[in-house]
Length: 411
Ligand SMILES: *Cc1c(COP(=O)(O)O)cnc(C)c1O
Image 1: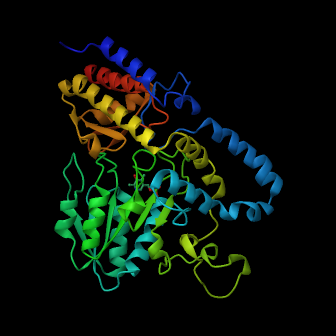
Image 2: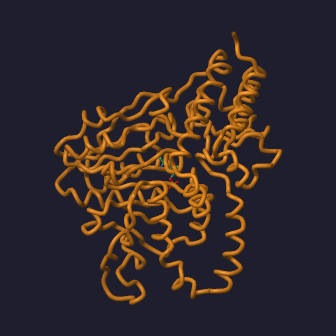
Image 3: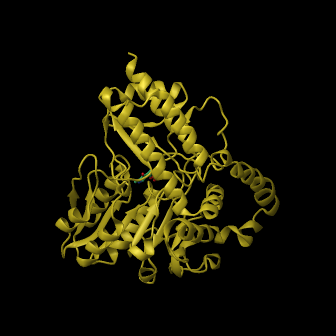
């Protein structure tokens, strides 16, 4: 028996009706915009929540416009760590005092990697992989040049990612730091962080995880996995808005000895004393450099409100159901047209997006955008179907895959 388009339409409707998070897509702005048929790129830029639109307007009028410079004393000074602690508790499995927000992921990665390397003097190697996001690779190339260190590259499978065995094969007594993405930005592979952390520590090295593609999509337990350092974007699944500041995590046991290379006044103990000489602030504030982007960190709080309401376990279940449905549709209607699935088939090893490949996908992505179906293209020939769990419906998944099929069958 073959599955007809009508069967799939009924399935999508049934899945949306049974979805425990079905009330959440409408809490995002634009969810009722008829021009947007399917937004499948919430893993690159999450939609704004309706609450954020109100929060930003109120902030300008009341907090910035009304409290003026007094706002720093009342709330803004603590906001990076207050929000950091909320991200830690709701999303990262991190106890208070280890997370803050500020800078971009790129800058925070640099600061944390340099700080980490300073804790392993005499060790000369950094482990990384060829499929990591460009910024991660470039930064580590730069750091290796600055400090005269050697990069040990892992070459993961195209449709997979870095395994604990891959890491075990390259770490040794020379390894200072292992830097990996928890979910691979291209294939969507979700690595086994607990196992990789253990293998890394067995060699006496430390682990820095990039959580850009996992924070807000998969469950994370930084404290119990014994991850040493982590960074991640807030404008992807956390819907913080374009260029929203990143979060950084430093495990409590490292904080007392940790120093990062960008010594700014806001990361100093008692910054308003304007004293001579840099003394790092106590605790996680020491990873801050200059004045944090307060406006940029406001919207994250609205997504945290939603995640705190439902919990990450429910978010992850929705995410798995969305990617499973996307894969089922892709197998039945795209694979027969020569499309290749380039994401893991095992949901336990898959993050919140699905990548499919075809030689025509670059040109087809541009046409999809014109018709309001918005995934993204990643070289060499991949369409990434990003399924932000709180804002995406099963109907959108179906509309997206059907549009891709349409484009593939017209020339
Ligand atoms: C999106 C992403 C980044 C982006 O870094 P920015 O400094 O925000 O541009 C970095 N690493 C990974 C793995 C990403 O997915």
